[in-house]
Image 1 (cartoon, rainbow, N blue to C red):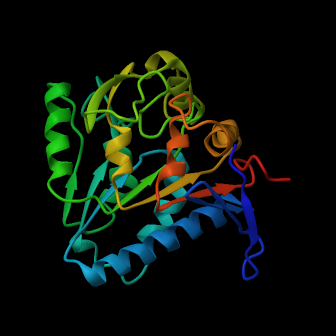
Image 2 (cartoon, rainbow, N blue to C red; image 1 turned 45 degrees about the vertical axis):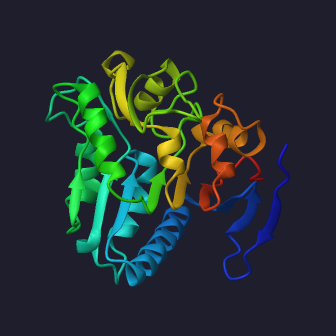
Length: 266
């Protein structure tokens, strides 16, 4: 079991910082404080990278848990977004092109259409999901990925790497997966779908090794429904039973929690 070293941030007493393995963990009193802090850190990392290199390449998760952070990031000053290329990390298979539940559509509304990115690479499964996965993998491989902004699912997934399909040594960068029932139910609980049966059974996802190869990871995880998954990610074995546990082995991963998601919160 990992032991967490805890430090109270004197300049912001609502921020409790500690380490879990190599991963930095910060806990905030509210979801709003959490999202704003994550956005500040991501913006700082972007400004620093853009001061040293011509282009930045980023991957984003699409989920309500990311909304506060993305709203704050879109308002961050001093970022030349015209030098930033963006991807997203997963997409449902089988939804109509104009379905509001599509992750690309959600990211359009919350990020992609709000900023003047250099390029936006959307995952489009139709008409051949396997071919789409291979093509997306090639786009990702064209140059290093600097940053990933992600969350953790109620079953511990990162992207759509649910426990039954997660593979820490996956030979693929992008693949077609079958979603487990807990993952599908989360989409209903997050008010993304009205009924369990409306949630697609299959999706395309970036794999765990593809995510772990990025330079820095910013993982934003609010809410009571995520507390058990966060506990497993912080304290359980590093195992595909909780795919997010692998984040403890990334040298530049920051995890942002609020009081509801933090298993150590009083």
